[in-house]
Image (tube, rainbow, N blue to C red; front, top):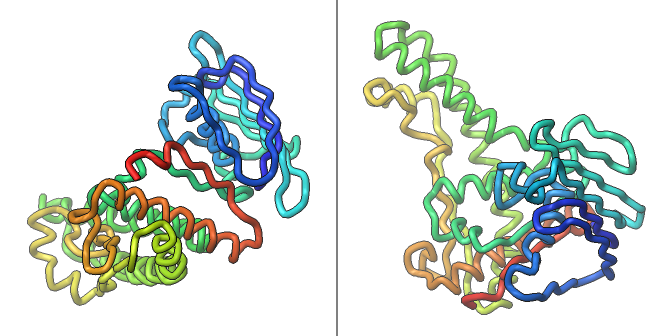
Length: 307
């Protein structure tokens, strides 16, 4: 999406804003506290229905006000598009597309792809495995939209198996109640591992190219995962019963981000970690453009510090 007009009412620090933008790269400058990050946040909220900074909608509303409004006008694939989103802490969020009310704000994400870099995105590289799994599963949803629900479905199956394990361990159920969920975890887990591999296969070449251009040589993504099988899950059933959790599967996997032989989480500098995250974002933008034929909206906040 190309945004040409930003209209804000009582959003964060802005009582009112009417801003016209030119197509292409837009650089926002200003003193600390001027509202640069708030402006970028409004673009994310207006196109995705949620903030990349907080899940507390009340924080989006200017202090002392009842609600906030974000309206974005522009073009998508050469056609005009108007997005409107209102935030009322007591009533939730409501969105419109070209004047028509959407059933939920989540529908915005199917209409416009937006990628954002914020300083806390460094957790994708320097954080623990859970941060990387979450990031790449969100990437999976954008690149492979038909499999958007796969990570959620798999997590639900693991949750059900864990509940069955705890019931059996406590004497409130038999092992036969675990078996259906073992099959579900194995089936969905294998599909999730395959989808993650497909996602990384799409992403890896562009990631290496963008990273090299930014000064991070031989950048690569590794996902040495094996799909869980029923036999493997059954073989460790006693251990899972003892612990009350499923101890193998893609919910425990990790994706390694490296430069050459160096794993950047442990051996990368802060600047290299930042370059890796930025390269991932630019690579995804490139792949999304190829797959959808429409470039995503890319938002970069404080991207040059520590480089």
